[in-house]
Length: 368
Ligand code: SF4
Image (cartoon, rainbow, N blue to C red; front, side, top):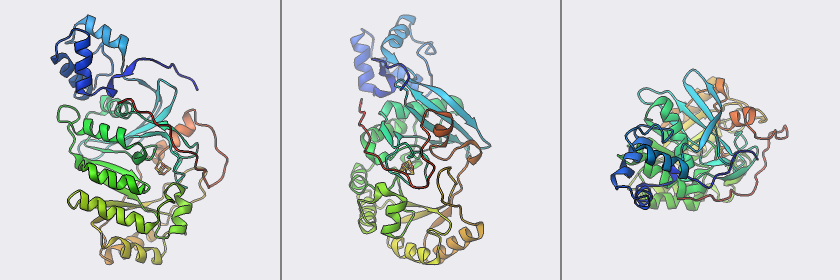
């Protein structure tokens, strides 16, 4: 592992009360905390030197004791609608984040862990397992790095590397910063948290009632097949998963749950799959995103033919489901999760085979 380790605290790991305490400890008035906060989350300053309405001595003290931005761009790719950054933190860990141009403000796709232990067969992020959880500040550093280049986001999805519900405390704190009107000021409805289906954490997220969207990666209607496609979710069967989804809706006052279904040719795109999907989801408050597979090197899985995608969606709609077909943007820039880190970063080359290994869970890293 390379990179310079630092005893300095990442400034994004400090909330407003912690920033106030820092100012008090340094004989500064309270309002200085708010000034720094505004520079970080409204003006997206990536250095203390840029905070020109602070006294020079204060800027120097901040630089000596706190880290900003705490990461550097190791590699980047520009696509037609996408801009992907491979960021390297102080300890040499690398993660990906993407800005996706949409109508209006861009969508930011952020990572929550360094790598991922879930082992999904269609994902490059998991090929080296999970190194550790990201801190709240490290998650926010991705958002500010993108915002400094693209402006404020209109949507944030935690669909980069990692299983967000296995780092829920830090993700929750990041959501609170993203929705703070004095910071990014995003509506919680504009934030999506995906999961492979960590059942107890789905209920915990429901109890938090943050107002964010829950997006469950379903991908199969059969427990045996789901275990193969998503070994990290194998601990809970579909019955338990759907019960947790129903509880999430109940705990959040009727919020619908988004289900994602990556359509894989000859694997889960049969009429019987569509029929089972209808039976499973119709009783729930739901929205289903049908995602034609985006090929990943090392996976032997294939994308479906376009006519099969359309036919599958027609069957679901006829059965009464709310369905959207979603296309992955940025295949030209290795925008699928984990691809840039493998090709341009330090991630080691995995064995050339389709199956992926599930390694042990991530080390916790909680600085907040
Ligand atoms: S799809 Fe998400 S949960 Fe599955 S291995 Fe990739 S990053 Fe992890």
